[in-house]
Structure formats: C-alpha cells, structure tokens
Image (cartoon, rainbow, N blue to C red):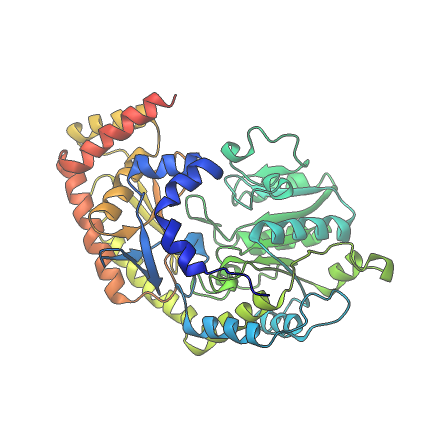
Length: 461
C-alpha cells in the first residue's frame, strides 16, 4: 500500500496562498506586519547568502534567519550529510541505547571548549537556556539567577524570566524570581551575590538587542566574583557562538574567561534541523544526574536525534575545513570599518559597533534644524521608526534583507551568513550609502514612507 503524497505538487498547487494561510491559521499579525512594511515578498529559492524571487531577482541576506543560517542556505556538505543519515535508516531515538552520533558531536564541540566536559543536546536556543538555568539551580542548591538589562535569552517561561525586555515579559507573569543588573555593573553583581541565594549569572557576551558588548574585563571579573561566592557563569552563545564574532565563542575575545555552562544553537543546525547544546563542567552534570533514578530527570523527546547530530557534525567540519570563523573575522572587520567611515558623513548615523559579522548600526538625533523636525516627528509617533525607514528601502530598492535590532530601537543589526565575501560588503555599503543620502536630503521616497509609518503608529495606539 502506498500513500499518494507529492510535496512538490502540493507546493505548486498551494504556495500562492502562503499569506492567506498564515492569516487564517497561524499568527495573524505576521502577514499584517509584512504587508504594512512592504516585506511581503515571495521568494522562490535560496543558496548561500542569497534568495531569488519568481522573476529571477537576487536578494542579499544580511539576516541569516536570525543567525540560524551561519553557513548560508543549503550548504552542500550539510545537505549531503542529511541525505546520508536518512539513507542509513538508523535505529534512531530508541531511548534505550547509546547511539554514536551524539557522542561524536559532543566530542567535536568539546574540542572547541577545552575547559568543559559534557554536553546536553536539545532542540532550540531557549531550551539550551532552560537547561542551563535548571542545571545551575541544581548544582548550587540556590534559586536565583542574575541577568543583564536588555538581555534576550528566549521566550519560554524560564528563559523569559531572564529576558531583560518588558515588551516580551508583559502579560506572562508570574515568572521565576530572577534579578536584572546593568550590563557590566560589577558593583550590582557583587551586591546581589552577597545575599547568598544566587545560583548563576547568565550573560550574552554581545547582546542581540542593540548589539551591545560586555565592557572589557567584565566577564573575567564577573567570573572571579561568582567563583568567590559559589555561583556559576552561564555564557549564552546561542547567537554569538560558532564563529559569529570572529572566534568560535564570543567570550573568547576576553582572555582568561571560562564559563561553567555555555549555550549554543542556531548555526549548529546548518539551517536544517533544530538543535541546541548546553555544555558544562563534569561536576555540574554529576549533580544533576546524581543516580540511576535520575537518569531522565532532564531530557527531551527529540533531543540528540540522528538528523540533528548529523547536521551538527557537518557544520563543525565545514567551520574547520573552510576557515569560516576566519572569514567572519576578516569580512566583519572590513564591513565594520567601511560603515564606521560613514559616521562623520551622516549626522543621523551615530555609531557602528560589534565584532565579526555581528554589527549594530545606531541612528540618533541630527544636529541640523530641518532634519531635527523630521526626526522629532518620527520619535513622537514611535521610537524605532527611522531605523525601519532605512530597512525598508534596503529591501524594496536594493534587495537586501536586514532587521531592526529590537522594538523601539534605532539600531539595525547585521548578522549575515558567515560565508559572505567582499563583493557582498561592497553591495551592502553602496546600498546603505544611497539610502542614507536620500534620508539626509530631507525628502524623497524614504521620508514618504516615514510619514506612512507615522500614520500607522498613531493608528495603532
């Protein structure tokens, strides 16, 4: 008996309904938002750092699926590994054996993390964070975890408890009893640690919201304070890990930092199969899995499945063989320097920051009287509209996909695939310069769209 199912035929018949299907059956605000800002494109195929639409126009991807597509789309090595693992018909997820692929992937990850000993595999970045929170509480016997203001660690309940943005937390209380400190505030960290109930500090070495780095020396000093008080350091490398910032982990930019737990995900998937990893010290794992009775005290139904493990192994092989981390460092430095040169040229361009291929472009209040009036119009309606005014023409006129770094932030975040080259840098800088030229002229389509955004913002109040 065979089932008559043809995926290609289904897509050919129904793909044109994509926005209607989402509006009817999924998050109805997503298509509404995409229509409003003109992002309601129809992409037909993708490869590497580019998309193509039905007319054959190519788009440069400077978003990488929020960092998931570290190797770009459809990398041939990852794709072949997934074909291989399916063709092998492995006895996957029996739950009562020790399959080889998880052990092999853990071995490869730990080779890049020599001070860590064991790995737990889950399915998402939020799950990696949840794991770290649970492991820290169990290992220390303490209830409270510290996090940094404006952090983003995920949207499940535990991860949301250490999320520093109220817009994500509102409406979901009560959360866990965790406490925020300022990014880089060692005095606040010491003050909270003195209370004796802190299990850990969780920190992104570079925050995704706004692209803010931890101050020089903070991670090392924080680690010493935490160790002195019997608490742990959790490095959230879900977005920054696996080469994004020009080193395998972002915390490695600061010498002498050895987190007790490290969370990775996103790029480990190769863009295909959801996977995450929480790496930690041996003694922490042995506290959690303290007896045979507790062998499944923390587990996941799809954790360490063969497809995810194969994708992860292929990703690590590509990172090493193709010098992807080095490329992120070199091309990222070039992109950042080219953009930094523009700061003195445009009065609304205030700062370019970040490391490797994680770059934040921040806009701010202009000095000239004419532009100040237009800026004030946008800020009165809603903060973040100028950044959106830049993002939209980058897509509409220059076919470059970017994102505003967070709600009500005047920051664009660039997190392209780690494989982009100098030609892609030239394309982005040329397009960005053209948009900024028009924005600073005080007229044109950029400001026409700005007025549309203002009307939309006022209507939504």
